[in-house]
Image (tube, rainbow over all chains, first blue to last red; front, side, top):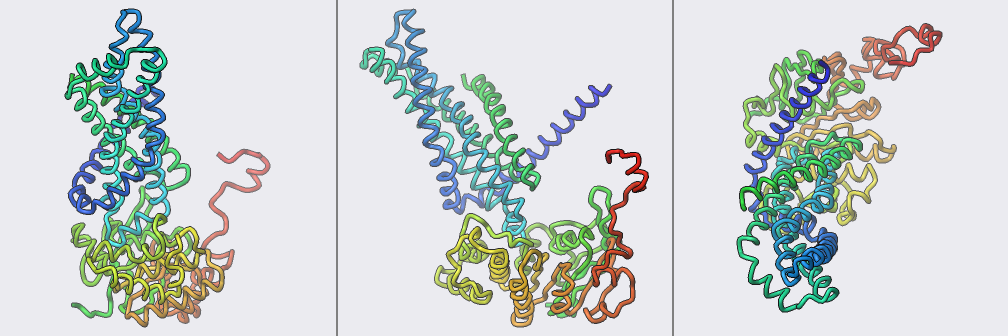
Length: 255
Length: 271
């Protein structure tokens, strides 16, 4: 009895939250045209969320690529086709690992920063003060951050994939002795434009999801130290799950 | 434009938060050009009252009027337009922490006007000079003391030349010197700029020196109104307890609890 009650309580809470998020998303979309008129604010946010995530993205990309190189080499050697390593690494990185791992790292690095920044702004009355100055915080603070995230994400994913391919090259060609010509020519022969666009589209979708979730959690955080902390945790959890679910849906739709 | 002596008013306002009645039939007119203080014990909804007055909250019933306009009838854009005529000073200043003092004061100008940079600089420096902080223009909010932060927030609140300035607890947590400075600033701003000032506070001493008109709130109602001198002459027990800071009176020192002796003897842990 109490189990059923708990279940329906959770379900109701989930639906309520989804409703609040949808309403919030509509507000964000509604103010976007006005936010686009001040590109400087968006560029600032691309710097904050994008440029400042570069180091972690590049480092992770390199190592993910190197692991791909090792695993791919070992697997392909069994079939005697190690020259396909370049293709395997490029396809894996461009279509899946690049967008997904970048989005997960983005949620952890930039998403948490966004949530805690906005949560603290709300806790210290900065957002209320803006409203009193007749400035809509959704347009002035939230929308530029979301737009910045949407621009940053595909760029970061591209850099991730680039470094990943370089990592696979280091391991496959330099360490394991795969022929460099075959590594590159096979990759160029079999990677097609739609493989790249699939990755870019996924990245854009993840960019929308991760940044919207991060600012939503910050904006609706309980304005206390504990509340902001919890909201930050929720950002990582909800964004990560959203990225993985979206990834499945997009892969199914785009393949 | 109307020039009635009342610039803003709450009439018959009722407001409840999660079933708890904060206001029940509150009437509170605010006179143009005066310093009006709203006082009352903590938890009587003083901040809620300000939020009603600025349209951040909507009353359950009754009317809130500013400059002859019923706030409930305004759309979002009209409400924002009205707020440009109101400046508000938040308790801790609420400065934007990622930009410096100068940019904080310039913020409303940049948002609402297309003034050239040289003119913005002149306006900002004049407002900072008025609060005595022109030299602090390039400091970040984190480098300011509490009193300085509040003065910067005051400069920001007057940068659009509002008609009404609202102060939420302007004296809370300030040292005596900063308190005196803020007190004189509120009075001078009001008289020099021809503003109407609304001060929410529970600092009896400061308010007595500053205000032209005082409303004392308790349990969602105005229990006393008049000049500070009139209030000090009042014999109403509630008013006396508040003004003299007495522990005994209509407002009890103890939060409602079960029988003291019984709880000690039973040594039950409060549930």
